[in-house]
Image: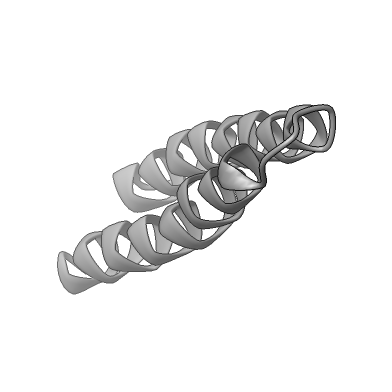
Length: 64
């Protein structure tokens, strides 16, 4: 196992924790009168982590 695979595993753990936090924000947004927390959960909790993960994996793969 090289260092790239280890870094990817660490990034994946942080990624899934971030996604779970985003899902909780979306669920919490349904209990409010406005939809601001729902959109924040979708953008900040689902879309941003996917883009950040792709960028970090691209950087990690460039070291091979």
